[in-house]
Length: 298
Length: 250
Ligand code: HEM
Image (cartoon, rainbow over all chains, first blue to last red):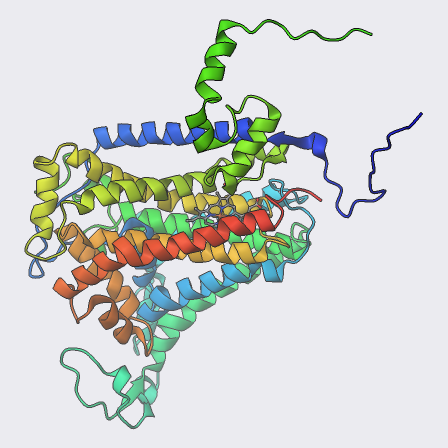
């Protein structure tokens, strides 16, 4: 009598739990199909209810006020109002994209993957970081647009006068009457020849002197960069002290969640709360909002 | 020993046999209708589109709450945008004399033109939102961890490509919204130290948003960027399979 023995390797390199697996058809294909169908239906409905905006024909001589970038860039446009253009428009997004790409090389722990919020404190960590990023950004925007000073004055009759003008706008710190900058500080030469790429565009002439404006540099780059880097570090450090951040993964959660909060707030303010002249206004005072029926000006 | 007797075929079985076991069906799909585990696996393995998937996956990954289908839906938006985009291309000419009129024409004179334009617009917004949410899903499930480091990097590139695709499309209607949005947007790029003005000039084909900018944005929007995005998506999907499917607890 022959016994058939099914050959089985004693040890598999990676045990695959076959019992835990389901077939892609029908289980996954079904889910994909339903969600695709659902989204198609939703988008048809949206397209039926709301027309894509079309304003007057493009005209370089008639400025759209407020002129706004697409909504997903309005966070950057909002940042631009508060700091040096290159810092807000280029350095911050580039740095953030590089930081994002470096995430998996910084946190190489394989533990805790494939599960939502697998770490001990990750939910707390996420929610609080998100809130800090969200409301902290709002506080900074209100401060730098002079709203905080205005309210202090309106509600408490508190007025700092000129010496406390930086409570209204950080830009006031550039003023020599507030900070005693030496007279040479705003024109420190650093380039004595004409570097062509630095000097291009309509009206460009021969550059003989390129100068650094130190107060502007400090106020428009130093302060905001300090806030962005400093707050992130402070938050992570604080969470480390109270034991919420134990691993690199936890630190990344703090960073990412804080970013998402700030990103959301910047986008919301830039989209709904900036009116003509980029002044802070209420959304219902805003005229040309994309896609709101009846609000497209023709 | 009881031997199971084959039951008499019902009328349903006969119709089924005629429909799915005939010569033509077999020439297209090779397998019968996927109603047995064997056929279900074969259909996934032999169909080029379904073959993006493995034949079986871990049961936690079919739970909606694990991925919320966000990556898949982003891809679905990309496909939908391709379809509606091709339809819009039939009527749209990227010249400053015609662009705006063509859009008006699409909205008023073309059958379902307004619908196609709306779909294209809202799908584009949806794709930007979905790709962002997909990134958050991947992050909060810790799915970027080894061995998926590189696929996360590919993902970041896809995120940027999605933004660029949407941004280049924004100019095409050639209305005030488009013109000033792109003016503001490219001014942001132009503010870069040293290389900024050059970059802006290169993007716009001039110092201002004009005919050259329109044709550049159009070309990038309809062929350059979609091609790049498709290549990176192919790598993205391939890597998901190579890295052992979706991440799950070790
Ligand atoms: C056009 C953009 C993108 C498309 C079409 C896309 C598509 C997909 C799909 C279909 C999956 C399978 C699981 C799922 O649906 O969640 C997936 C997984 C994944 N995606 Fe994306 N994705 C895109 C962008 C991104 C971005 C921006 C990131 C991150 C920065 C990213 C990182 C990943 C990673 C790491 C996985 C593996 C997840 C896991 O193992 O659980 N992808 N992607």
